[in-house]
Image (cartoon, rainbow, N blue to C red):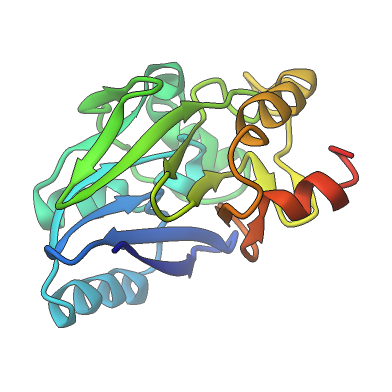
Length: 212
């Protein structure tokens, strides 16, 4: 059984996740840890739960989702995985931050690329990669079929959707991908979003003003 621990971090209130299972193996998803106290909280959580980090996997690479990549990569000596189409955002990490008034340190290149319909595996767990561009060109979401859990980054929010006005964003593409790829998953799927509270796919089908 998987456990998903959410950390609300950095000045933009981004949701970072540590996902683990009964083996003690874990992965980081979208580590946006920015402040030293957030770094220490991560260290404490890993130690207190006897976890073994094995990789970093990002839904996308906007600056608020990669603020903690180098900290995590160096602290635990693990690789950073993301989609090839978002590699340019990693290269522009510093200028991304500056554009929004934040100091960002450089982020080293992606170690390995995520490919649609392949699986992220750790411990006894598999998460399927689904490519859902529109918010960012390399945006993926991670779906666990057994437990009906979706980690959706900034594609879908409670009652809203991701912005599409940044480079590589496209509104019609995002709407189409949500309806055709995400809404094909079970209605009871619990969605962990990149900002804000969790939701369910069935609720968003019926109530999200962008999608009804």
